[in-house]
Image (cartoon, rainbow, N blue to C red; front, side, top):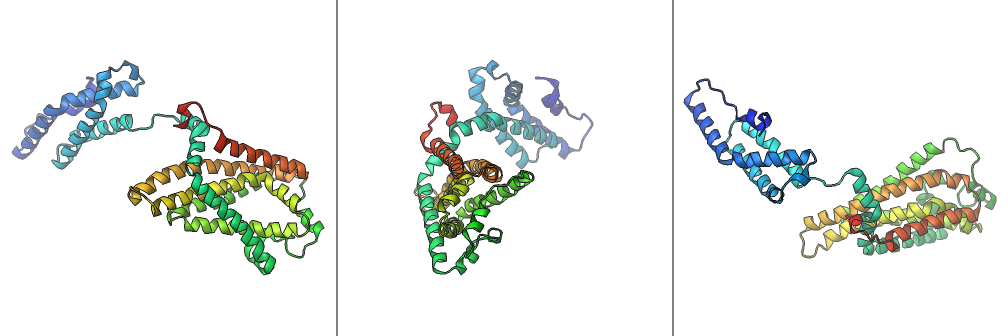
Length: 354
């Protein structure tokens, strides 16, 4: 054992001390002598692992590591309860913390985790909440139909549903030319990056809110999906009424196939948590919420990436590409790519799903 760390901790002051302090020192010495061999062995193992020399460890040392960690943690607990000297506590706290990272700490770096996430982990998490996705999809379709029916019966619902930034020229009573102009491209690409950042912030906020509201048994998530899709249903009614249904669908599909898919997944992930809490089965509510929460968080990590893609598509291709066919091609390609990735692509490498 090197003189650093443990040897320094073992040092004792030889100056004469009062009886009570001397008694405490004797208890500390006895406590140390009974356990120091395990501590020394654990520290030696940790030093080799921290230096990247795991292959040089024997099988006995690797098998003993969890036991030695628990022994050190138990020693730390006893040392705290019996108020042993500060040097002992400081040494054991450092030793236990280092051992915890080796026993329970992450085994993957950022790039390794990201590769596993993109190469199967994300898509597997999405497939595991397939029932919630089906429910959320049905709710979104129903929300669109509700929005259409409401404005069909009373046009005042249009102003109640559609945000103010969309009611410039896109309002009931607008001419076909005015509505078609709102779908036109822009020749000036300046400032579109700022526009993309704004769109990402807005869209990501909607998706995160849909996920976060899932804790209330998923009901608020469903209501949020209904409201957002009712807005879409109202706008579809407006454009279809002037014979621009296909043009509007093409305009929307450029970013919408990605954005709406992401909102669908976010709502489904939130509802997955709520459904698990409402129907935990043999598990406790907390255990069910924790398990579904981990799965939902993995899905949401990917949703944020999808929102970044949607914002870029909305700010650039949608504003610069004007042909109906070209817009449908872009939107359809991304929709096919997402469906293939989530539901058809199955990695053959088992490590990709870790």
